[in-house]
Image 1: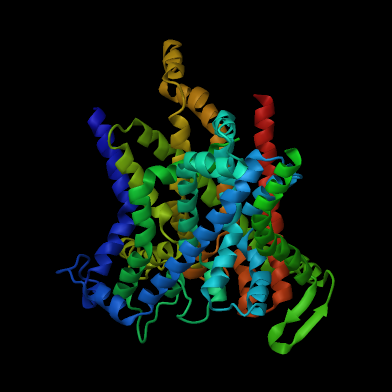
Image 2: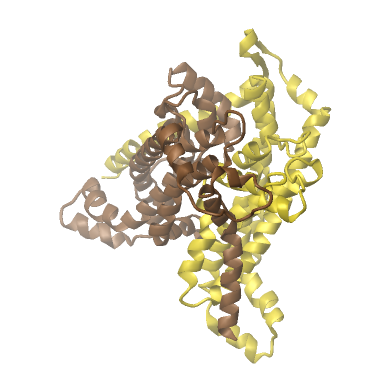
Length: 269
Length: 285
């Protein structure tokens, strides 16, 4: 009886992920068969779409741009965020409550409200169509999240940990580096993962601030995927799966850390 | 010591706050000002018009239609996501050693970029050749104003229910089994246990999940923009899409900013409402 329940749950899950599975099949189906109303299932599997996307589409360059922007955003947010979080969590910071409130509020800011001023700013700084434009724009959602999550992790550490370091003669910065940071490293890693995922997936800023292949990220390249006379569904499917692969791999291999980071943000008082 | 620590605190937090002020606070103030201007860069137009855009919006049927679409999309998708998320969490919670694998599968749609989700569903909905069109005898899901919005909701629910499931599952894991045993001793049936024990304990985390989902639904952009672009005939044009098309489609930076400010106000109001509800629950318990 019990295994029947489990089987039902797993079957429901299979239906849930079927759209992705169907896209995998589509990406491996010969072009001529995709629009064939007589056949649903491909007669043979082919890698022609992946070859076309890798050899003759803007996607490889776009994947590189995405990686640069996501890594840059994560590095900037993690660097600034952990230092700031320590001050917010442990030091006598003037106006701490107001700053925390501002940080929480700014996680709710809709990108549509900030995109026009950021566009004017990016243009004014001459950063249009560069990685930096997107790194700065993505920092607007990455940094508040990082500050909020990491400050939470730091607050949950026992104070005795640092006090032991002070007794040993360490200063605040020494304690931060040798005691606090190693202790919150899993939490920081989780927050960095969430940041990486959201920067990789971001579309509104990326679509608005880029103009050429020099800086277009993978989601933008996918949205603009070129078709000359008809829509190349097979190539688009292959490009979509390549764009989705990095986040999926991250979740697959680092699920435990990621889940921890997500839950910390939502379950904390 | 105290004074030194204060200076250190300011020094540590200053770089983050300066960057944050530049990329969030300043743009938010700037968009408020932009919404009071008429600004069309291609014609070199730049003048202060006060509240004219807001007065126009108050009587603009296109705006009110977009507001209606936004509310419909948000209410439908958040309600379905919470219901499905709870159902999935209850099912996963009973799963034994397969739970980690199952959770990985559930999270798969959630971690995909919105544009990828849009392309996956665009192909499924494609008239005649798409799988969901073949099954339904050639229905043009996204091309028909009657089915386009429900079709979008389905894609959004598919993508974001896992988030609710994840939060609910984590909460279920912290409920002591003794509570269920006590309920069973009292002779409570399965549905009574769910209504009297499980649901009340899940409620706070579901409120948080519903808050996050509501904010995201009000801000939703990539899925709608790529799947329908607001069409057909405006059937799926939410306020966010309307604002974006005004800002960067017709390049009316002032008018588009006014619509964006209204989205901002809606998001803030929703966040405030939920926070009050959470506080109310905490005060009552």
